[in-house]
Image (tube, rainbow, N blue to C red):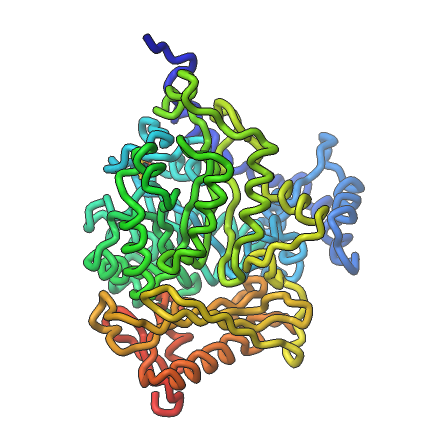
Length: 557
Ligand code: SF4
C-alpha cells in the first residue's frame, strides 16, 4: 500500500502569504521629518556623479547611513524621492529616476509587463504533474511571486493592475505602454461574462476610469496615459476553436500562450494531458490564421520521456511546419508534492533528470531555436522549497549561457539578439528577411539589425494559404506583430538614438506592405492591441470589427 512521504502541497498557509504580500505592497513611508536632510544630501551626490554604475551608488549610500546605521536600498530611495517631490510640490526628475531604476531589464524590451491572475476555477485537465492548492488557480502555488500578489489582492483585476502599475512606476519604470498578462490556468475555461468583466476591470485600472462595457473601456484606453499595447492569455490546445478565436479577439487578446508540452501522443497520454498533437496543430493553425502571436510551452522530463526523446521532440517544434511558434517557454517538469507524478516517483516509476543531464539537453535545444523565435523562459519560477527532487536552480538560463560561451556557441533566438537599450545608428541598420512555411500561411519575419547583428525591431507578416477563421480577414495579408526595441520611454520623452524613435516601425510596416503587394494582396490587416490603435491609424489602417486594415498601396488607405 502506498503512503506518501510528503503531505499534499500546502506550500504556505494562504493567510501568511497574503499578509507578506500586503506588507510588501504597502511599505512604511520614509521619515522625511527626521531624515529629509540626509535624503537631500544623497540626491545631491547622485546628481553630481557623471555616470552611476551600481558600485558608485552603493558608495554614496554608504556615505550617508540612516541614524540607526542601516543603508537605504534603491527601492526605498526611489520611494523617499517621490515623497519628497510630493511634499515640496515639485515635478519628478525623470532623468534621475531613470538612473535609479530598479531591475532596468524589466522594461528594456520597450514595454512594461503587468501580470494578473484570474480567480481559482476548475480546469478540465488532469495533468499528472500539475499542483492543486486550495484557494489558488489550478497549477499555481501561492508563494510564486506573481501569484502572491494576486492572493494579496483577492484576485481582483482592478487592484492587481493598479497596484502593479503603481509599484513599477515607483521603481522608476515608465508605465505608458503596458503588456497585460492574464494568467491563472486555462482562460478558455472561465465563463465569458467573467472574462469580459476581468479584462474590462484591468482596462479600467489603466484608464483610471470606470466603464460600463468592455468596448467602452477599450475605446477609452486608446488615449489613456497607460496604454495597453499587448494582451496575453494562456489556454489549452483542445480549447482553441473558431468561436474561441473570435471571442479572444473581441476581448482584445493579441498573444496566446499555448500549453503544448510535448509533440508525442504517447507522452501526452502518459501524462494525462487530455489532448493530442492533432489538437495542437489545429490550435496553432487557427491562432496563426487569426493573426495572434503564439507562445508555446514545452516540457522536457515528463513521465516516459528520455533526454534523447526530448531532443527529438524539441526538433519537431521546428521541423513540423504546423507548429513553428513565435515564442517559446521551456518548463522542465518540476516534481511537486501531492501530484500524481510525485506518487509515481515514490513508487520508483519516475526519476527527474540530474542537473548535468538537463543542462546538456537544454544547451542542445537552445542551439536549435530559429531566428524568428524568442525563448522567453528556461525554467518556471517555482520557489525551490516546493520542489521534491530534481533541478531547483532558478538561474538555469545563466548556467546554460555560460556553457554556450565556454564552447564558443551563440544562441540565435530573438531574446539573445535584442539591442537592449544600446545606442542605435539608424543610418547603418541592416534589413533582414526570413521566409518560412507553416502550411496554413507563408510567414515573413522582417527585421532591422545593427551591423553586429543586434536586433532593433522586427515584424511578423503572414500570407494566408487557406480561409481564415474570421470572415473579416478574408483576402487580407496579416501583420501579427510589430516590435521595436528600446527602453520604454514615456510618451514625449526625448532620448536620442534609441530604437523606438528612429522610425524602424514605419520602415517595417512599409516593407510588409510592399511584400504583400508583390504577393498579390490588395488589403493588409493588423491585430492591434487597443492602446496601439492610434499608432496604426497614423499608418493608414482603419478600425474594422475586430482588426485594423488598410490597403497595401499606402497612398490609397
Ligand atoms: S491543463 Fe494546465 S492547469 Fe489544467 S491540469 Fe493541465 S497543467 Fe494544470
